[in-house]
Length: 419
Image (tube, rainbow, N blue to C red; front, side):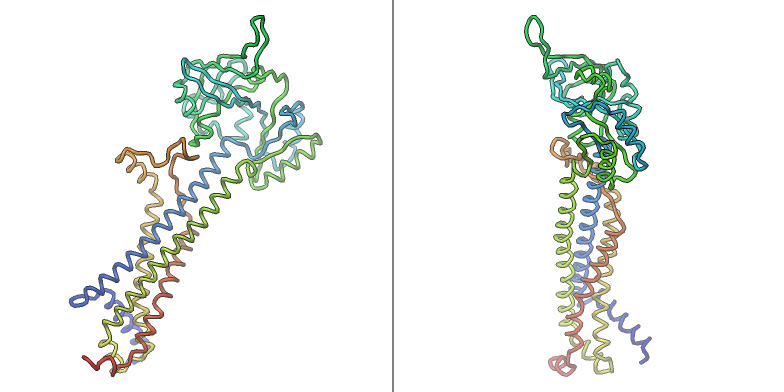
């Protein structure tokens, strides 16, 4: 028997054993269960890793939409010569934008509703270069923050807490008071809500409001000074080095920070979580793959007579080995392929699936006041899919070796003794 015919009969018998019928329905059933087990494990791992990747991507994009790549502040919380610092920053070829800001705490009041908030005074024209605030506006425009207008743009959660909309006037009260003949009175100012934004992170949507830079300077009595300047850089991963370069070149004593320092714990926790989930779910794939061992052991036991007959008509032990490796490989490949297909489809349509179940069940999976991101994003990466598929196939193929080796060592006379 030439090698081509031998490989054909080995492959054909291996397929027949996977889909055995008649008296061997049980063998087919456990083969399908093994395929299903691998498919589910691969699907779960792809979907979970895609969700973790999605959280990492969304967290980075949304954080950088509201916080700059880097910022420079005065030692005492006040930066005097910020124009000169801005010119120094823009002279650096790796800096793409500079915007001053004034930041302070305030109490916002509307009717009987009140809420603490962080007011951030910005220059709308310059702010566009360093953040994505304009891109997350749901009502109104960033340009409405003109000097002297005393307009304010609120986060959607903050607006909901105060029960205000565009056109309503809110009273802003500061902790710093003014001395009057009647005693110490809190400093207040009425602002008109000119816009609402939604970034999708409760941390910002609930507590941050934007006003014009000059209006904030008047409110906080910072004549000609700002809290600091925000920088946009060409390479966000080089932000720590770039902001230090700018500060050293300017020569004054300042405080520098960047997005990696401000939110490093978020990204570090995501990476740790991703690694732990990968290991845990990999064990699920391993358990599913090892089911192939029990499946093939039962098949070998059931096919003792067939193996003996094949051996007596000239089949070599290596041919018997390849028959059962073929059967296990088909189970592994079929399960992995089904898992990759199902996992990819679920990851690509996860947001729609979540919306459907939320609408059907009337629940919210990620409460905005509990989680940083209230959506359930997914970021399917080809490298993850290929890595998961390769690991699943390797485990599945490895699981075929022992049962196939046992089958190859079957002695024909011993197997036929009780037939």
